[in-house]
Image (tube, rainbow, N blue to C red; front, side):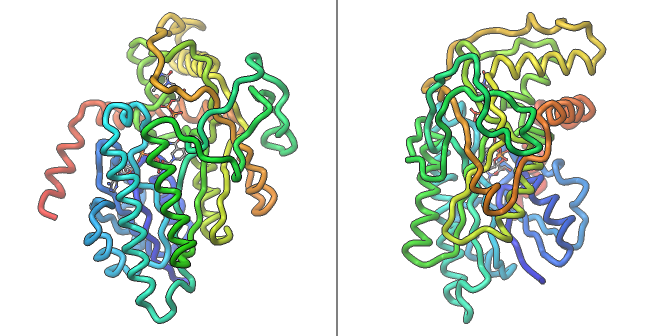
Length: 378
Ligand code: NAD
Ligand code: TYD
């Protein structure tokens, strides 16, 4: 079937994996990647598919309503997968307004433009879909009731069989009440509410998914895993916030992209699905795994980089524990993570070490200027 799909934020970390998957897997679809190319957007993430005939890149700001109207009409868009966002908690603490503008107003502009376009068509919302990608951070923080970890209740699947820890009895469910703490999660929560409001008020076919922390290739090196890999390589300090006791549930980014593909095609309208890795780690433990893996792959003696660990002032409002129960997705659509964490982290570390040029390019600050020059006359 021919479809015209708009993917926003496709030059970012997760978006680039989703764009790549869709462009390669669905040659009959026209994939339009819409991205503002902020500091986090990087077209080098998509070098391998940029010349494909079913792929178009458009530089635009989702908060520009007229632009959204124009683009959705021009490409006759029938499906939207919305990932564009400001995504880093630490930046949101310093500059909450940018987060409200892009995540809230931008999502609203996209919803409104899609609504106007689809409602004016003879078939209206028939065959249309607005899929909003959100985060588990909207649910707030869970207690860390088992500081040493307990056996995870989610060990029934092949992929989670080896996974051992949970750090509490509570997990985020699709029904968990929203309780965001950071400006980032507050802006994502707000955007989620707007998406659901467009379903409830106008009948727009929407879906929301809330996913746990992603890791893998092409992640901007302000986030824990790529930042630490890069710092170890350059023998720079590894800033551990607080005591390093905070717990996150990590999912390999390609598994998230696979879930998005499945849910976009087979998910039920108006539903929410939680996506998680059944894979909780304390920051300090994951940091030790990263150090060990980088040292091994660089040929350093074991323990070589451990002294780079530097405890620093905790992040303001730092959520203690995130843990997703994604059994609804498993039960209803048959999705589960495909990769063991050990394998995922090995692939990730290897990728960053093998793609030093990608990293140097980003960290040099040159590339933002390059895109500004390249697209300045749009
Ligand atoms: P990212 O920061 O790597 O990429 C975001 C992309 O959005 C960039 O390419 C950026 O240029 C673009 N963008 C930002 N503002 C824009 C605007 N106003 N108009 C158009 N494009 C704009 O983020 P990511 O980690 O890939 O996250 C993608 C989505 O997934 C976000 O909505 C995020 O909230 C969500 N999410 C992320 C994670 C995670 O662990 N990274 C987990 C769950 C959910
Ligand atoms: P991050 O990758 O920013 O993701 P999120 O805040 O969305 O979960 O951070 C992951 C965890 O690592 C989080 O608990 C904060 C912590 N952290 C550090 O300890 N040091 C760092 O330099 C960074 C970036 C994060």
